[in-house]
Picture 1 (tube, rainbow, N blue to C red):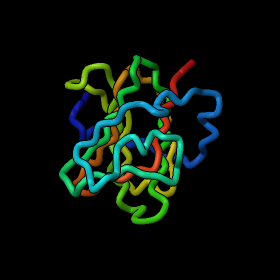
Picture 2 (spheres, one colour):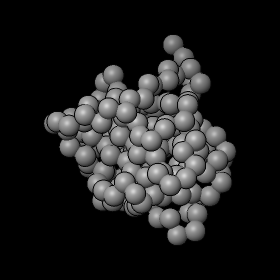
Picture 3 (spheres, rainbow, N blue to C red):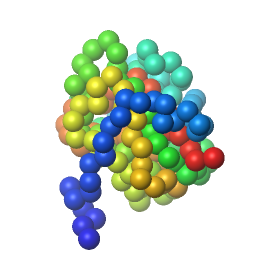
Length: 153
């Protein structure tokens, strides 16, 4: 069994947000830490409930956004909304990591292609964690319009 990052299966992306309709978004208005900050694009813009605002990092190797959910949840799926006004192809090679220990997050999903307008990543099994990290496995800008993290009730 291979546990290296490149061996983990890619997760398919669905634009059907309805998968999440019976679950609770636990990321709304939570704290976000970015690997870097481009101009004044704060991380909390990706969890503010407004899909027209967005966060933005510098052009970095493996840029990330870390959401602190404030408590431990069983995470069922993540809905990612891309930046609407520019550069939709920048959101590619996405890795989603979840866990309670910042030094040992589990990779829950990987999506190689560009996300498009939006994407629901539904996990085959729920992941338990307080922290959710969205990271690009590339040297690029990370820009996200909104992230919704859905917990199992």
